[in-house]
Image (cartoon, rainbow, N blue to C red; front, side, top):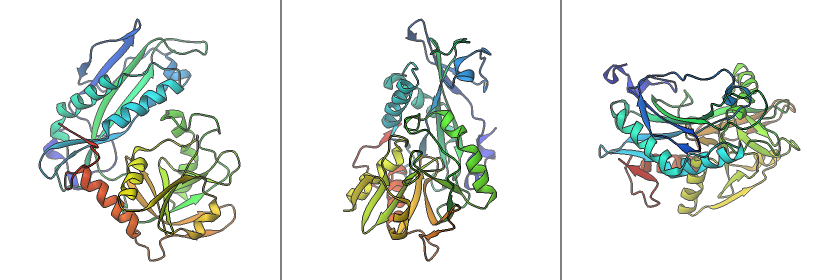
Length: 340
């Protein structure tokens, strides 16, 4: 694929082949050299633990071409920390933060021509993943791991862009178990959400707003993203051991404080949606996806959030502030960007 053939302004959120990816293997008790390859394939043993016992974790982050022409990777160190926690949770060998950061920077530089131009609305999505590669028939952790980082230029995750969409609540599906793997970025969490997501899409909704898996009383995640709402001038977001700690949500919480808003991480009963003025799903892929209404498919209750059909003022300001930092349009006072 030639980068000059890409329609930057109309990219979907999908895979586009790039020049190289980078890899590193843990074997004999140590991480080996970092290698670059043009191959898009993995030579994997059929009994690898990644295939049978779900020893697979991943991350998602983005690089941007700034207003000044410089390349910025957003909150790289936070992703390095989070994948280490995921590895510990699945009894995998953690990738040292310095190797993680070096490999991400290396793959971005190697594929620089695929970083969308400033003003296109697109970005370079970065996907690090770690898999267990030892052959195992019994259930036990692998002793060998491969860590790979590849990139792809992407457009917005939701084709509607920054516009309110309708989401739904369905109690027949759980995303994760109460003391399960929800707090880690594990492929199995997403596999568990596919059936619910496809059903929601078939009914015309952009995502499922899950309820907590134990009591079905409190808001959990919103499809593949965290959820937040604005209520009485406060930024509220669900707190739970079953929710992935979103780096985008963490960033929004800091920006909300910068704007003078109080931030509350707590249990949010579904009934509280009657009293919020704004709501959105947030994550690396979507950044922020405003919510128009939440339809409870089990009770028939509709929670109308965006009464005028437009994104709320606080959500819009948070989104614009975050994007301005990522694109170098405003001062990065919190030191979130890694500039190459």
